[in-house]
View 1 (cartoon, rainbow, N blue to C red):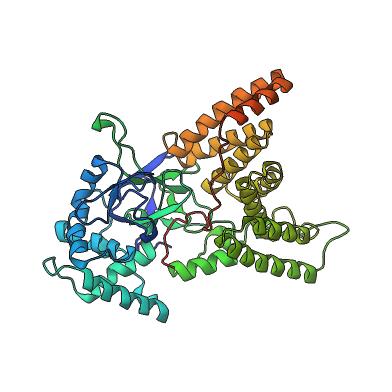
View 2: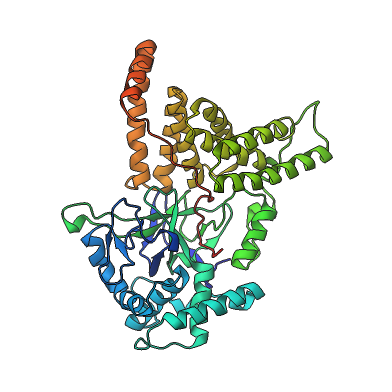
Length: 479
């Protein structure tokens, strides 16, 4: 089932894992409200120092190149913000950018587009009362912002645009792929149907204009990349949701967010549900009642953890995780998703607190569980293995760390490609850990002495502060 409203996409030729099937620049895109001053409004990279637009004082750019590239899309927005006195919310800004582009080019097929904005599905007829209320508020706010001298559109058409944004907007992440920073519309991507076990992945590439000669510059785009061998005529599918949920939960999420019933093979046959709900086997097999109690305890703990993370009380998060693991370990199997969720949080938070040895033990168990559940070329899996590898390296577990970094590199070469900033970072780490591993194998004592001296002299690379958000999901939903 597609959000776009057409028959899906079919492969015209054979593709191998890692091949780019197509790349598509955004039809329109905006930075999230909360990050407008720390993320470039053209390439969506997070930067320390940005140039502010001197006119509207709202838009920020990496440099003059990004500012020049933005002018066509920012021009109308710039004068509208000045006139309005302040910038409206991201949804209004995105709708306005779409409609200004339609005003410039018409609403037919744009260059290299397989589908027009008019033909994308809006699902407005499926909205519940709450969503209809939000839609009315968005339309009212939009009309207040929209300049009188711009082309005027009817209420129904404006509602269509907001409906399209609601179920087709794609999440844009920063150059490290760790934080969702904006939202955009990519009409061709909207044609790719969903499958919980897809043969393609979508990666956001922020582009690069660091080369001196502009012929080597690349623009911000999404890339549809093959995850497995695809034959001519095969349907190209992507997953709209994270696979780390039992089929019933994924189906509920897809119905709620995208208004369709998922009938993919993995949902129909409940493939891997048994692993995700695994309980301890053998003589001490727990009763159904005990399992139910532990799952409920896990759910309650996850809520408490979210609260503690929001408040930044990370030692409290660790305490809650340890208590929960004590209850889970005698009852839940190694691949149970409630156990894996706690392992993921505790390893990330302990790494941030620089308690690397304990973090590494939990990260290893998390990765072992993930490897049994995820598709071998899943981007989330690659990122998790990379984090676990870095944690092991920090803990001085150089062999395990290097092995994980190599594993992550192999996955990200397929999901992100060799030129993506994350893959490049990983390649540097791979070379570094390989060098250290050689030194370690030649003279373990000398290696630890040198490592100790190096860590004393250099500021230890601190892990990023744990995020309170889930990893960026494929399509953006307004909270």
